[in-house]
Amino acid sequence: MRHRDRVPPLVWDSVLPALLLLNVVTTYPARELPVAAALTAALTLPLLWRCRAPLAVFAAVVAAAFVQWLADVQLPGDIALLVALYTAAAHTGRRGTLLAAAVVEGGAVLACLRWSSNGAFLTPFVALSAMVVAAAVLGMNVRTGRAYLAAVQERAERLALHQEQQALLAVTEERARITREMHDIVTHNLSVMVALTDAVVYAQHRSPDRATAAMLQISETGRQALTDMRRSLGVLRADEPDAERHPLPGIAQLEALADQMAAAGLSTGLEVRGGHAHVPATAQLTVYRLVQEALTNTLKHTPAGTRATVLVECSAGSVGVEVTDSGPRPAALPAAAPSGHGIPGMRERAAAYGGTLRAGPLPSGGWGVRTRLLLNSSGSSGGTGAV
Image (tube, rainbow, N blue to C red; front, side):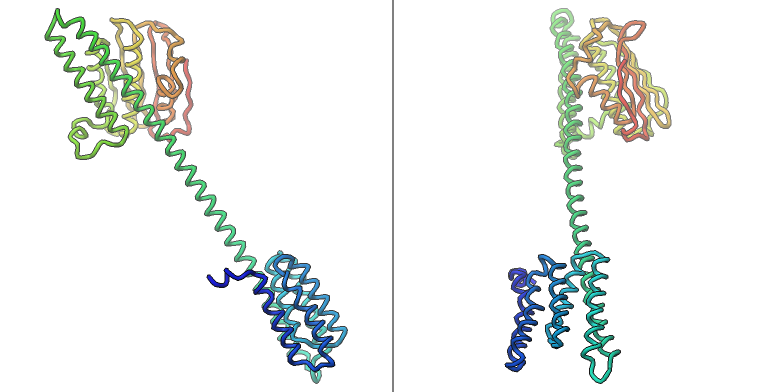
């Protein structure tokens, strides 16, 4: 097959005409040679273009065969009819194949009527009919196989394209996830560290013990930020002790988060209703990041003395999150955050679990963030909104 593919198709198509012409030249007497050679050439030479124009070649071969029948000359070149029929069947539909086979079958009937010896019509007719059917069936099988291979190739190309698109989507989603995680980690921890640093500057002379405690809290916050960043970027090795000391943040770590915010100057109250053991780790991480982002915004944008309240309600199929504070805040500030960060980032996290995030000023004063995560949602049923 490797050597065959290197030879042009025209060379292979010219083999049969050359052999038939050679047979006529070497076997026919001189007085019959001109007519036999001309008819053989008319029958076989069109086969050179059978792959380019199968129907035109079939018509030319049939016309030459009819002239041969009128001239009452029997030739081995009649095999060209079967080759032309095979080619037509391989390149046309079922209707064209049946029509071509009927034409050749009619020629077989005429040939048997004229050239059957001793009136034996049935035997040569059955033999010729079998060859006609075989040529047509072989051509149809080749066409079906070619169509099947084309469909398989097209399917493989579509599958490869789909896999490439899925890979690109996965990369985009991973980048968005890392961006959200980095924003939450950096913004929260830097805000806490800045607040603690201000407290150290204020208390270093009046209360050295409180200043020392705040500095230790700054150090711990920095280490926690580094650990969270390494985990989010996927480069934290499993054998590092930090992986055991700092598990994936969840609802159980909200109390430590509230204490951290209180140490930074934001008095935070936490209430968790219902058990959260059944809540998946990824959903717990989403709850943690939503509360963390909301408290960080409160710490950054409200004056001293503001109090925040966190309420987490766990049920069988959902988790409700509500974060409110008592401090004033400009209504336009959250909307001015860059897309994908801050409030927009919180909406994306909530939408991943079919939740609608509502963030805005409260009627009684202060600011509130509310959402409910559906644990059986893949993110396709949720929407986003703000009030």
